[in-house]
Image (cartoon, rainbow, N blue to C red; front, side):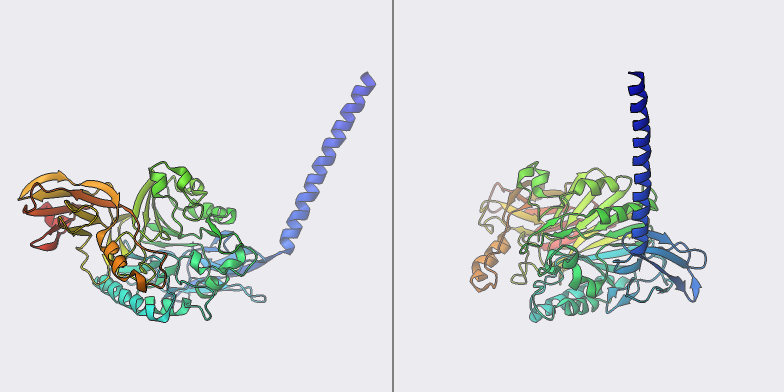
Amino acid sequence: MLADSRTMQIELKYGTMKRYLLTILLSLWCACAWAAGSVTVKGRVLCGGRGVEGVAVTDGRTIVRTDAKGRYRLASASDAEFVYLTLPDGYEIPAEAGAAAFYRRITGQERRYDFALRRAERDMTRHRLVLVADPQVYFEEELDSVRRASADIRRTASDGVETFGVACGDIIGDITRRPTLFGPVRDALAESGVPFFYVFGNHDMDTDVRTNDYSKRSFKERFGPTYYAFDRGKIHYVVLDDVFFLARSYLYAGYLEERQLRWLEQDLASVPAGSTVVVCLHIPTWSCAARRGEWGKEQTNKVLNNRRALYKLLEPYRAHILSAHEHYNENYTPVPHVFEHVHAPLSTLFWQTPLSMDGIPAGYAVYEADGGRIASWYWKAVDHDRGRQFTAYAAGADRHKPDAVTVNVWNYDPAWKVRWYEDGRCRGEMTRYTGYDESICDYVARYGDRFKYKYIGAAQTEHLFYAVPSSPDAEVRVEVTDRFGNVYEWSAGKGYTSRPAAQTAK
Protein backbone atom coordinates (compact mmCIF):
# COMPACT_ATOMS: atom_id res chain seq x y z
CA MET A 1 0.00 0.00 0.00
CA LEU A 2 2.97 2.31 0.71
CA ALA A 3 4.28 1.79 -2.83
CA ASP A 4 0.85 2.47 -4.28
CA SER A 5 0.63 5.67 -2.21
CA ARG A 6 4.04 6.89 -3.42
CA THR A 7 3.09 6.09 -7.00
CA MET A 8 -0.11 8.11 -6.61
CA GLN A 9 1.80 11.08 -5.14
CA ILE A 10 4.27 11.01 -8.05
CA GLU A 11 1.43 10.86 -10.57
CA LEU A 12 -0.34 13.75 -8.86
CA LYS A 13 2.89 15.77 -8.71
CA TYR A 14 3.71 15.27 -12.37
CA GLY A 15 0.08 15.67 -13.40
CA THR A 16 -0.01 19.04 -11.64
CA MET A 17 3.28 20.08 -13.27
CA LYS A 18 1.94 18.98 -16.66
CA ARG A 19 -1.24 21.05 -16.24
CA TYR A 20 0.88 23.99 -15.05
CA LEU A 21 3.15 23.78 -18.11
CA LEU A 22 0.16 23.47 -20.40
CA THR A 23 -1.35 26.58 -18.82
CA ILE A 24 1.88 28.52 -19.38
CA LEU A 25 2.11 27.33 -22.99
CA LEU A 26 -1.53 28.22 -23.61
CA SER A 27 -1.02 31.69 -22.13
CA LEU A 28 2.07 32.22 -24.28
CA TRP A 29 0.18 31.04 -27.36
CA CYS A 30 -2.70 33.45 -26.61
CA ALA A 31 -0.25 36.31 -26.05
CA CYS A 32 1.49 35.56 -29.35
CA ALA A 33 -1.81 35.24 -31.15
CA TRP A 34 -2.94 38.57 -29.71
CA ALA A 35 0.35 40.21 -30.63
CA ALA A 36 0.06 38.87 -34.18
CA GLY A 37 -3.43 40.35 -34.38
CA SER A 38 -2.55 43.72 -32.87
CA VAL A 39 -1.14 46.96 -34.20
CA THR A 40 0.65 49.83 -32.51
CA VAL A 41 -1.10 53.14 -32.98
CA LYS A 42 0.75 56.25 -31.91
CA GLY A 43 0.73 59.99 -32.33
CA ARG A 44 0.53 63.30 -30.50
CA VAL A 45 -2.17 65.52 -29.06
CA LEU A 46 -1.20 69.13 -29.71
CA CYS A 47 -2.45 72.61 -28.94
CA GLY A 48 -0.74 75.47 -30.73
CA GLY A 49 2.04 73.10 -31.76
CA ARG A 50 2.80 72.03 -28.19
CA GLY A 51 1.99 68.66 -26.63
CA VAL A 52 -0.96 68.34 -24.24
CA GLU A 53 -0.24 66.06 -21.30
CA GLY A 54 -2.68 63.64 -19.67
CA VAL A 55 -5.26 63.36 -22.47
CA ALA A 56 -7.04 59.99 -22.57
CA VAL A 57 -6.70 58.23 -25.93
CA THR A 58 -8.56 55.01 -26.74
CA ASP A 59 -9.48 52.51 -29.42
CA GLY A 60 -12.67 51.54 -27.58
CA ARG A 61 -10.91 48.78 -25.67
CA THR A 62 -7.83 50.23 -24.01
CA ILE A 63 -7.29 53.74 -22.66
CA VAL A 64 -3.83 55.35 -22.43
CA ARG A 65 -2.68 58.86 -21.45
CA THR A 66 -0.45 61.27 -23.33
CA ASP A 67 2.97 62.04 -21.84
CA ALA A 68 4.48 65.47 -21.12
CA LYS A 69 5.07 66.02 -24.84
CA GLY A 70 1.55 64.97 -25.82
CA ARG A 71 2.70 61.61 -27.15
CA TYR A 72 0.64 58.43 -26.89
CA ARG A 73 1.30 54.84 -27.85
CA LEU A 74 -1.56 52.36 -27.99
CA ALA A 75 -1.33 48.61 -28.56
CA SER A 76 -4.59 48.24 -30.42
CA ALA A 77 -6.48 45.20 -31.66
CA SER A 78 -6.18 44.71 -35.40
CA ASP A 79 -9.95 45.04 -35.85
CA ALA A 80 -10.18 48.39 -34.03
CA GLU A 81 -11.95 50.97 -36.18
CA PHE A 82 -11.12 54.25 -34.47
CA VAL A 83 -8.60 55.95 -32.27
CA TYR A 84 -10.19 58.81 -30.33
CA LEU A 85 -9.90 61.22 -27.44
CA THR A 86 -11.74 61.88 -24.25
CA LEU A 87 -11.97 65.61 -24.97
CA PRO A 88 -10.45 67.39 -21.97
CA ASP A 89 -11.98 70.38 -20.26
CA GLY A 90 -10.63 73.76 -21.29
CA TYR A 91 -10.52 73.03 -25.02
CA GLU A 92 -13.02 73.72 -27.78
CA ILE A 93 -15.04 70.86 -29.20
CA PRO A 94 -13.55 70.16 -32.65
CA ALA A 95 -16.43 69.88 -35.11
CA GLU A 96 -17.04 69.05 -38.75
CA ALA A 97 -20.37 70.16 -40.21
CA GLY A 98 -21.59 70.76 -36.66
CA ALA A 99 -20.80 67.22 -35.43
CA ALA A 100 -18.12 66.65 -32.78
CA ALA A 101 -14.94 65.34 -34.50
CA PHE A 102 -12.78 63.82 -31.78
CA TYR A 103 -11.74 60.64 -33.61
CA ARG A 104 -9.65 59.26 -36.47
CA ARG A 105 -10.56 56.15 -38.45
CA ILE A 106 -7.79 53.53 -38.36
CA THR A 107 -6.84 52.57 -41.92
CA GLY A 108 -4.97 49.52 -43.18
CA GLN A 109 -1.61 51.24 -43.66
CA GLU A 110 -1.54 54.33 -41.47
CA ARG A 111 -0.45 53.91 -37.86
CA ARG A 112 0.15 57.50 -36.75
CA TYR A 113 -2.72 59.79 -35.81
CA ASP A 114 -2.18 63.27 -34.44
CA PHE A 115 -4.90 65.42 -32.88
CA ALA A 116 -4.98 69.22 -32.75
CA LEU A 117 -6.90 70.93 -29.96
CA ARG A 118 -7.72 74.59 -29.54
CA ARG A 119 -7.84 76.17 -26.11
CA ALA A 120 -11.27 77.48 -25.16
CA GLU A 121 -11.79 81.22 -24.90
CA ARG A 122 -14.31 80.86 -22.08
CA ASP A 123 -14.28 79.11 -18.74
CA MET A 124 -16.48 76.00 -18.90
CA THR A 125 -17.23 75.68 -15.20
CA ARG A 126 -20.64 77.01 -16.15
CA HIS A 127 -21.97 75.43 -19.33
CA ARG A 128 -25.14 74.16 -20.97
CA LEU A 129 -26.24 70.93 -22.63
CA VAL A 130 -29.21 70.87 -25.01
CA LEU A 131 -30.59 67.40 -25.68
CA VAL A 132 -32.59 66.56 -28.79
CA ALA A 133 -34.31 63.17 -28.64
CA ASP A 134 -35.45 61.14 -31.63
CA PRO A 135 -35.31 63.58 -34.55
CA GLN A 136 -36.29 60.50 -36.58
CA VAL A 137 -36.51 62.19 -39.98
CA TYR A 138 -38.12 60.10 -42.72
CA PHE A 139 -38.60 62.69 -45.49
CA GLU A 140 -36.91 65.90 -46.67
CA GLU A 141 -39.97 68.01 -45.88
CA GLU A 142 -39.50 67.20 -42.17
CA LEU A 143 -36.09 68.89 -42.17
CA ASP A 144 -37.75 72.31 -42.04
CA SER A 145 -39.06 71.45 -38.58
CA VAL A 146 -35.55 70.41 -37.49
CA ARG A 147 -34.25 73.74 -38.77
CA ARG A 148 -36.94 75.58 -36.80
CA ALA A 149 -35.82 73.74 -33.67
CA SER A 150 -32.22 74.67 -34.48
CA ALA A 151 -33.20 78.33 -34.70
CA ASP A 152 -34.79 77.99 -31.28
CA ILE A 153 -31.63 76.36 -29.89
CA ARG A 154 -29.58 79.20 -31.35
CA ARG A 155 -31.68 81.67 -29.37
CA THR A 156 -31.31 79.61 -26.18
CA ALA A 157 -27.53 79.57 -26.64
CA SER A 158 -27.23 83.27 -27.49
CA ASP A 159 -26.44 84.42 -23.93
CA GLY A 160 -22.73 83.59 -24.16
CA VAL A 161 -22.81 80.48 -21.94
CA GLU A 162 -20.72 77.63 -23.36
CA THR A 163 -23.28 75.31 -25.01
CA PHE A 164 -23.12 71.93 -26.72
CA GLY A 165 -25.78 69.51 -27.93
CA VAL A 166 -26.51 65.79 -27.77
CA ALA A 167 -28.71 64.11 -30.40
CA CYS A 168 -29.88 61.16 -28.34
CA GLY A 169 -30.41 58.53 -31.03
CA ASP A 170 -32.87 57.75 -33.82
CA ILE A 171 -31.33 60.46 -35.96
CA ILE A 172 -33.24 59.15 -38.97
CA GLY A 173 -36.44 57.20 -39.46
CA ASP A 174 -35.64 54.77 -42.28
CA ILE A 175 -32.18 53.22 -42.66
CA THR A 176 -33.14 51.48 -45.93
CA ARG A 177 -33.51 54.79 -47.73
CA ARG A 178 -30.58 55.61 -50.01
CA PRO A 179 -28.94 57.93 -49.57
CA THR A 180 -29.69 58.05 -45.86
CA LEU A 181 -30.74 61.32 -44.27
CA PHE A 182 -27.93 61.27 -41.67
CA GLY A 183 -26.11 64.10 -43.47
CA PRO A 184 -29.14 66.38 -43.95
CA VAL A 185 -30.23 65.96 -40.30
CA ARG A 186 -26.69 66.71 -39.13
CA ASP A 187 -26.60 69.82 -41.33
CA ALA A 188 -30.01 70.96 -40.07
CA LEU A 189 -28.91 70.67 -36.43
CA ALA A 190 -25.64 72.43 -37.30
CA GLU A 191 -27.69 75.55 -38.07
CA SER A 192 -28.08 75.94 -34.30
CA GLY A 193 -24.45 77.02 -34.17
CA VAL A 194 -23.94 74.46 -31.39
CA PRO A 195 -21.61 71.43 -31.79
CA PHE A 196 -23.51 68.16 -31.41
CA PHE A 197 -22.47 64.76 -30.08
CA TYR A 198 -24.44 61.85 -31.55
CA VAL A 199 -25.91 58.76 -29.87
CA PHE A 200 -26.72 55.54 -31.73
CA GLY A 201 -30.43 54.60 -31.86
CA ASN A 202 -32.40 51.62 -33.11
CA HIS A 203 -33.62 53.49 -36.22
CA ASP A 204 -29.97 54.18 -37.04
CA MET A 205 -28.95 50.51 -37.29
CA ASP A 206 -28.29 48.58 -40.48
CA THR A 207 -30.54 45.52 -40.55
CA ASP A 208 -29.17 43.71 -43.61
CA VAL A 209 -26.17 42.37 -41.66
CA ARG A 210 -25.29 39.20 -39.76
CA THR A 211 -24.34 40.54 -36.31
CA ASN A 212 -24.70 43.48 -33.96
CA ASP A 213 -21.18 44.73 -34.77
CA TYR A 214 -22.03 45.36 -38.41
CA SER A 215 -25.34 47.06 -37.59
CA LYS A 216 -23.44 50.25 -36.65
CA ARG A 217 -21.74 50.60 -40.06
CA SER A 218 -23.76 53.46 -41.58
CA PHE A 219 -23.84 55.44 -38.32
CA LYS A 220 -20.07 55.12 -37.83
CA GLU A 221 -19.40 56.38 -41.36
CA ARG A 222 -21.00 59.71 -40.41
CA PHE A 223 -20.43 60.08 -36.67
CA GLY A 224 -17.53 57.84 -35.65
CA PRO A 225 -17.48 55.59 -32.55
CA THR A 226 -20.74 54.74 -30.80
CA TYR A 227 -19.35 55.04 -27.26
CA TYR A 228 -16.94 57.66 -25.93
CA ALA A 229 -16.46 60.28 -23.23
CA PHE A 230 -15.63 63.97 -22.81
CA ASP A 231 -15.21 66.54 -20.04
CA ARG A 232 -16.81 69.96 -19.75
CA GLY A 233 -16.06 71.99 -16.66
CA LYS A 234 -15.94 69.64 -13.70
CA ILE A 235 -18.48 67.21 -15.17
CA HIS A 236 -17.63 63.96 -16.94
CA TYR A 237 -19.91 63.01 -19.85
CA VAL A 238 -20.19 59.51 -21.30
CA VAL A 239 -22.04 58.39 -24.43
CA LEU A 240 -22.96 54.70 -24.56
CA ASP A 241 -24.48 52.43 -27.20
CA ASP A 242 -27.16 50.22 -25.62
CA VAL A 243 -28.92 49.11 -28.82
CA PHE A 244 -28.03 45.45 -29.44
CA PHE A 245 -29.19 44.13 -32.82
CA LEU A 246 -30.31 40.48 -32.78
CA ALA A 247 -29.78 40.05 -36.53
CA ARG A 248 -33.29 38.78 -37.07
CA SER A 249 -35.68 41.08 -38.90
CA TYR A 250 -35.79 44.34 -36.87
CA LEU A 251 -35.35 42.73 -33.46
CA TYR A 252 -33.05 44.40 -30.92
CA ALA A 253 -32.63 44.60 -27.17
CA GLY A 254 -31.39 47.16 -24.68
CA TYR A 255 -27.99 45.77 -23.71
CA LEU A 256 -24.41 46.88 -23.01
CA GLU A 257 -21.77 44.46 -24.27
CA GLU A 258 -18.89 43.39 -22.02
CA ARG A 259 -16.36 45.21 -24.22
CA GLN A 260 -18.19 48.47 -23.59
CA LEU A 261 -18.50 47.87 -19.85
CA ARG A 262 -14.76 47.09 -19.59
CA TRP A 263 -13.98 50.30 -21.43
CA LEU A 264 -16.30 52.21 -19.09
CA GLU A 265 -14.53 50.73 -16.06
CA GLN A 266 -11.24 52.13 -17.37
CA ASP A 267 -12.82 55.46 -18.23
CA LEU A 268 -14.36 55.97 -14.79
CA ALA A 269 -11.20 54.85 -12.98
CA SER A 270 -9.75 58.36 -13.41
CA VAL A 271 -12.93 60.18 -12.35
CA PRO A 272 -12.81 61.17 -8.66
CA ALA A 273 -15.50 59.65 -6.44
CA GLY A 274 -18.28 62.11 -5.71
CA SER A 275 -18.04 63.75 -9.14
CA THR A 276 -21.04 64.29 -11.38
CA VAL A 277 -21.15 61.83 -14.26
CA VAL A 278 -23.71 62.27 -17.06
CA VAL A 279 -24.44 59.21 -19.20
CA CYS A 280 -26.23 59.58 -22.54
CA LEU A 281 -27.76 56.52 -24.20
CA HIS A 282 -30.78 55.82 -26.37
CA ILE A 283 -32.81 53.06 -24.70
CA PRO A 284 -33.79 54.00 -21.11
CA THR A 285 -32.55 51.96 -18.17
CA TRP A 286 -35.82 52.24 -16.21
CA SER A 287 -39.53 52.33 -16.96
CA CYS A 288 -42.94 53.24 -15.59
CA ALA A 289 -43.59 49.51 -15.11
CA ALA A 290 -40.41 49.21 -13.04
CA ARG A 291 -41.47 52.18 -10.94
CA ARG A 292 -44.71 50.33 -10.15
CA GLY A 293 -42.88 47.06 -9.51
CA GLU A 294 -44.55 45.43 -12.51
CA TRP A 295 -41.38 43.77 -13.74
CA GLY A 296 -43.14 41.34 -16.05
CA LYS A 297 -44.49 44.22 -18.13
CA GLU A 298 -41.03 45.50 -19.08
CA GLN A 299 -40.05 44.74 -22.69
CA THR A 300 -36.49 43.81 -23.64
CA ASN A 301 -36.40 46.39 -26.44
CA LYS A 302 -37.58 49.21 -24.19
CA VAL A 303 -35.17 49.01 -21.24
CA LEU A 304 -31.49 48.31 -20.64
CA ASN A 305 -31.59 44.68 -19.56
CA ASN A 306 -28.23 44.65 -17.74
CA ARG A 307 -28.87 48.01 -16.10
CA ARG A 308 -27.65 46.82 -12.69
CA ALA A 309 -24.13 46.54 -14.09
CA LEU A 310 -24.29 50.18 -15.18
CA TYR A 311 -25.72 51.33 -11.85
CA LYS A 312 -22.91 49.49 -10.06
CA LEU A 313 -20.22 51.26 -12.10
CA LEU A 314 -21.89 54.60 -11.35
CA GLU A 315 -22.14 53.93 -7.61
CA PRO A 316 -19.28 56.26 -6.55
CA TYR A 317 -20.78 59.23 -8.43
CA ARG A 318 -23.68 61.63 -8.61
CA ALA A 319 -25.07 60.28 -11.86
CA HIS A 320 -27.60 61.53 -14.38
CA ILE A 321 -28.73 59.25 -17.20
CA LEU A 322 -30.17 60.99 -20.25
CA SER A 323 -32.19 58.70 -22.54
CA ALA A 324 -34.82 58.79 -25.30
CA HIS A 325 -36.54 56.05 -27.36
CA GLU A 326 -39.89 55.94 -25.55
CA HIS A 327 -41.30 59.15 -27.11
CA TYR A 328 -42.46 60.61 -23.80
CA ASN A 329 -41.04 62.55 -20.84
CA GLU A 330 -40.43 60.74 -17.57
CA ASN A 331 -38.05 61.13 -14.63
CA TYR A 332 -36.88 58.25 -12.43
CA THR A 333 -34.60 57.56 -9.48
CA PRO A 334 -34.03 53.81 -9.93
CA VAL A 335 -31.27 53.75 -7.30
CA PRO A 336 -30.32 56.53 -4.87
CA HIS A 337 -27.24 57.74 -6.79
CA VAL A 338 -28.88 57.79 -10.26
CA PHE A 339 -31.41 60.26 -11.69
CA GLU A 340 -32.70 59.22 -15.11
CA HIS A 341 -34.34 61.67 -17.50
CA VAL A 342 -36.31 60.15 -20.40
CA HIS A 343 -36.99 62.68 -23.14
CA ALA A 344 -39.94 63.28 -25.42
CA PRO A 345 -39.10 63.30 -29.15
CA LEU A 346 -38.45 66.32 -31.29
CA SER A 347 -40.37 64.41 -33.98
CA THR A 348 -43.56 64.12 -31.85
CA LEU A 349 -45.73 61.42 -33.52
CA PHE A 350 -43.29 60.94 -36.43
CA TRP A 351 -43.80 64.59 -37.48
CA GLN A 352 -47.57 64.16 -37.85
CA THR A 353 -48.60 66.31 -34.86
CA PRO A 354 -47.32 69.30 -32.87
CA LEU A 355 -47.38 67.17 -29.68
CA SER A 356 -45.86 63.89 -28.56
CA MET A 357 -47.99 60.97 -27.40
CA ASP A 358 -48.09 62.32 -23.82
CA GLY A 359 -49.15 65.80 -24.94
CA ILE A 360 -45.75 67.52 -24.70
CA PRO A 361 -45.01 70.10 -27.41
CA ALA A 362 -42.11 69.44 -29.79
CA GLY A 363 -38.93 70.62 -28.13
CA TYR A 364 -35.70 69.72 -26.39
CA ALA A 365 -34.27 69.52 -22.87
CA VAL A 366 -31.87 72.09 -21.45
CA TYR A 367 -29.40 71.24 -18.67
CA GLU A 368 -27.52 74.06 -16.94
CA ALA A 369 -24.24 73.01 -15.30
CA ASP A 370 -22.53 75.12 -12.67
CA GLY A 371 -19.40 74.01 -10.88
CA GLY A 372 -19.41 70.26 -10.45
CA ARG A 373 -23.16 69.71 -10.66
CA ILE A 374 -26.15 69.89 -12.95
CA ALA A 375 -27.70 72.93 -11.33
CA SER A 376 -31.05 72.95 -13.15
CA TRP A 377 -32.95 71.62 -16.13
CA TYR A 378 -36.16 72.35 -18.03
CA TRP A 379 -38.12 71.45 -21.15
CA LYS A 380 -37.90 74.02 -23.94
CA ALA A 381 -40.87 73.82 -26.29
CA VAL A 382 -39.95 75.11 -29.75
CA ASP A 383 -41.33 78.62 -30.37
CA HIS A 384 -42.57 78.90 -26.77
CA ASP A 385 -41.08 80.91 -23.92
CA ARG A 386 -39.11 78.83 -21.42
CA GLY A 387 -41.56 80.01 -18.75
CA ARG A 388 -44.18 77.66 -20.22
CA GLN A 389 -43.79 74.28 -18.52
CA PHE A 390 -47.27 72.77 -18.46
CA THR A 391 -50.66 72.67 -20.18
CA ALA A 392 -53.84 73.48 -18.25
CA TYR A 393 -57.46 72.77 -19.15
CA ALA A 394 -60.33 74.64 -17.55
CA ALA A 395 -63.27 72.71 -16.13
CA GLY A 396 -65.29 71.34 -19.03
CA ALA A 397 -62.38 71.49 -21.52
CA ASP A 398 -61.04 67.96 -20.90
CA ARG A 399 -63.38 65.21 -22.13
CA HIS A 400 -61.75 62.68 -19.81
CA LYS A 401 -62.56 64.68 -16.64
CA PRO A 402 -65.23 67.21 -17.67
CA ASP A 403 -65.92 68.46 -14.12
CA ALA A 404 -62.26 69.05 -13.28
CA VAL A 405 -59.44 71.44 -14.02
CA THR A 406 -56.66 69.26 -15.40
CA VAL A 407 -52.93 69.92 -15.82
CA ASN A 408 -50.19 68.17 -17.80
CA VAL A 409 -46.82 69.00 -16.18
CA TRP A 410 -44.38 68.24 -18.98
CA ASN A 411 -41.21 67.50 -17.00
CA TYR A 412 -42.67 66.54 -13.63
CA ASP A 413 -40.80 64.66 -10.94
CA PRO A 414 -41.81 64.14 -7.28
CA ALA A 415 -39.88 67.23 -6.13
CA TRP A 416 -42.35 69.46 -8.02
CA LYS A 417 -45.45 70.95 -6.37
CA VAL A 418 -48.76 71.34 -8.24
CA ARG A 419 -51.19 73.50 -6.25
CA TRP A 420 -54.51 75.09 -7.12
CA TYR A 421 -56.42 78.13 -5.91
CA GLU A 422 -60.17 78.71 -5.97
CA ASP A 423 -61.39 82.30 -5.74
CA GLY A 424 -58.02 83.33 -4.35
CA ARG A 425 -57.85 80.65 -1.65
CA CYS A 426 -55.24 77.88 -1.78
CA ARG A 427 -56.92 74.49 -1.99
CA GLY A 428 -53.70 72.50 -1.69
CA GLU A 429 -52.10 69.95 -3.97
CA MET A 430 -53.84 68.74 -7.10
CA THR A 431 -54.36 64.98 -7.42
CA ARG A 432 -51.97 63.11 -9.65
CA TYR A 433 -53.42 60.51 -12.02
CA THR A 434 -52.63 58.42 -15.09
CA GLY A 435 -54.58 59.26 -18.22
CA TYR A 436 -54.62 60.98 -21.61
CA ASP A 437 -53.73 64.56 -22.45
CA GLU A 438 -56.72 66.29 -24.03
CA SER A 439 -54.80 68.22 -26.71
CA ILE A 440 -53.11 65.21 -28.33
CA CYS A 441 -56.35 63.20 -28.15
CA ASP A 442 -58.23 66.02 -29.86
CA TYR A 443 -55.57 66.40 -32.56
CA VAL A 444 -55.55 62.67 -33.36
CA ALA A 445 -59.35 62.61 -33.47
CA ARG A 446 -59.43 65.56 -35.89
CA TYR A 447 -56.57 64.68 -38.21
CA GLY A 448 -55.69 61.02 -37.62
CA ASP A 449 -57.25 59.90 -40.90
CA ARG A 450 -54.52 61.91 -42.69
CA PHE A 451 -51.60 60.33 -40.83
CA LYS A 452 -48.98 58.37 -42.75
CA TYR A 453 -48.57 56.10 -39.73
CA LYS A 454 -52.04 55.42 -38.37
CA TYR A 455 -50.82 52.89 -35.78
CA ILE A 456 -49.44 55.60 -33.49
CA GLY A 457 -51.50 58.04 -31.46
CA ALA A 458 -52.08 59.35 -27.96
CA ALA A 459 -50.82 57.30 -25.01
CA GLN A 460 -51.38 57.43 -21.30
CA THR A 461 -49.03 59.46 -19.14
CA GLU A 462 -48.40 59.66 -15.41
CA HIS A 463 -47.67 63.41 -15.24
CA LEU A 464 -51.32 64.57 -15.13
CA PHE A 465 -53.15 66.31 -12.25
CA TYR A 466 -56.74 67.30 -11.55
CA ALA A 467 -58.91 69.23 -9.12
CA VAL A 468 -62.71 69.66 -9.03
CA PRO A 469 -63.90 73.24 -8.30
CA SER A 470 -66.82 73.65 -5.92
CA SER A 471 -68.63 75.78 -8.51
CA PRO A 472 -68.47 76.00 -12.33
CA ASP A 473 -68.16 79.77 -11.93
CA ALA A 474 -65.19 79.63 -9.54
CA GLU A 475 -62.05 81.50 -10.51
CA VAL A 476 -59.27 78.89 -10.61
CA ARG A 477 -55.54 79.47 -10.67
CA VAL A 478 -52.92 76.72 -10.99
CA GLU A 479 -49.45 77.17 -9.49
CA VAL A 480 -46.68 74.74 -10.46
CA THR A 481 -43.31 74.97 -8.67
CA ASP A 482 -40.38 73.00 -10.02
CA ARG A 483 -37.63 71.44 -7.89
CA PHE A 484 -35.51 74.59 -8.29
CA GLY A 485 -38.11 77.01 -6.96
CA ASN A 486 -39.26 78.43 -10.31
CA VAL A 487 -43.00 79.11 -10.31
CA TYR A 488 -45.26 78.68 -13.35
CA GLU A 489 -48.89 79.80 -13.21
CA TRP A 490 -52.09 79.60 -15.21
CA SER A 491 -55.55 81.08 -14.89
CA ALA A 492 -58.36 81.42 -17.39
CA GLY A 493 -58.08 85.20 -17.28
CA LYS A 494 -54.29 85.68 -17.48
CA GLY A 495 -53.13 82.58 -19.32
CA TYR A 496 -49.58 81.38 -18.56
CA THR A 497 -47.08 83.38 -16.51
CA SER A 498 -43.87 82.51 -14.65
CA ARG A 499 -41.55 83.76 -11.92
CA PRO A 500 -37.89 82.66 -11.68
CA ALA A 501 -36.69 81.21 -8.38
CA ALA A 502 -34.66 84.32 -7.43
CA GLN A 503 -37.70 86.53 -7.96
CA THR A 504 -39.91 84.09 -6.06
CA ALA A 505 -37.55 84.22 -3.05
CA LYS A 506 -38.10 87.95 -2.76
